Amino acid sequence: MSSVLDRSELEQSPLADLHLLANELGVDGFRRLRREELIDAILSRQSGETEAEAEPEPEAEAEVETADDDPEVEEKRPRRGRRGGRGRGRARGDAEEGATDEDAGEDEDKIVEGAVELLANGSGFLRLSPPDPTDDDVYISAAQVKRCELVSGDRIAGPLRPPRRSERFPSLVRVDTINGRPADEVAEGTRFEDLPVSFPTERFELGSEDPTVKAIEWLTPFGRGSRVVIAGSPRAGKSEALRRLGEALGALEGIEVSWVLAGVRPEELGETGGLTFGASADAQAQAVEQAIEQGRRVAARGGNAVVLVDTLEYLPPQAARRALAAARNITDGGSLTVIATAPMPFGGETTVVVLDGTLTALGRFPAIDLAGSGVVHPELLVGEAGAEAIAKQRAEQLPG
Image 1 (spheres, rainbow, N blue to C red):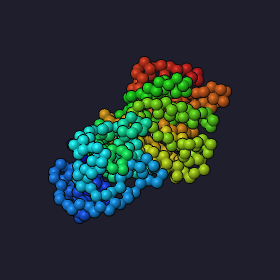
Image 2: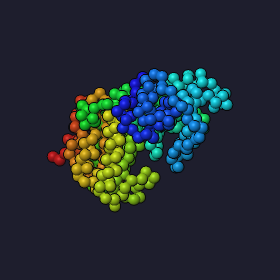
Image 3: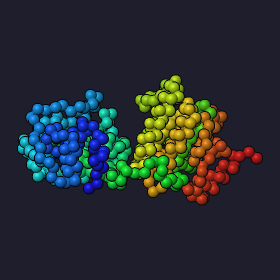
Image 4: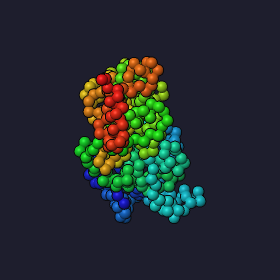
């Protein structure tokens, strides 16, 4: 099976990560091995060769560091004690619980697939029925998250190891595939900026009955990889339109949706959190860039990410442009869609939704100004007939 481990990467890893990896692979007496011997044993174990003989660990147990604010992780993480290879290390505990080494071997051959959900301490879970947690979810170590550069929303597959004594969940042995591609191929993939791109061709079919969502979807369509700006004067309804779009997008399967509230009123933060307009421009730009970077990683691995930003108004102009420019439809790959609010378009968008503040004040919402709005190559999203219908409605709003 595919693996993302290689000697050069292991040689650059901290000793603590090597110990954690060796424990996951069932390397005997790994704490007594010198660094080079430990790397050899890890490579041998992952390639299926017989690992080097080593003295067993002392019986003393050492506490594994866990996140104080994460009882779920704290409950399942094991204490490191005397343990041999995978079968030998489970022998006594399995006997007490009525299990056998043969049963464990069968479980270790089981391949699981699901969506990654990262935790605050760097580890994560493989959710088998995302987004809801279940008792069958599989633990992903922080070392694997770091080594494979996993992000929330990645769909991964690999073999599991049954829970050992004092563990609540099974653990992932290794990552074989990421978003349908071999893990080693993804790890050595082309840089995001160098991936081939094309105009958006797959429109988001939101299927919402909300009048705002329906109007935007059909009059100013956007798709996977679009750069969208919802523009308008103050109190034109930009934040409300973005919120409704976000709810509709969040209901779609296979889409990783993230929010960035930067520069909004304190009352608008709610439980979502974010930065108010009182935060510095640099702080707001950093919050947006972090969300964009995660979206880039999802898209580069073949997934589909949407980043919603409210608002770009107080960001340095160059930071706002960088955020929008990150959106793209990767040819035969994933996509990153950026939808943001701003007082006016920046240039370079593929979809601009302009809201008429005057009509909004009169009770019309959404009040889309089709004369100021526009879509680049709408025919790719709604077909030639749909594009002609949009052009006709737009012409009716133009003066004269």
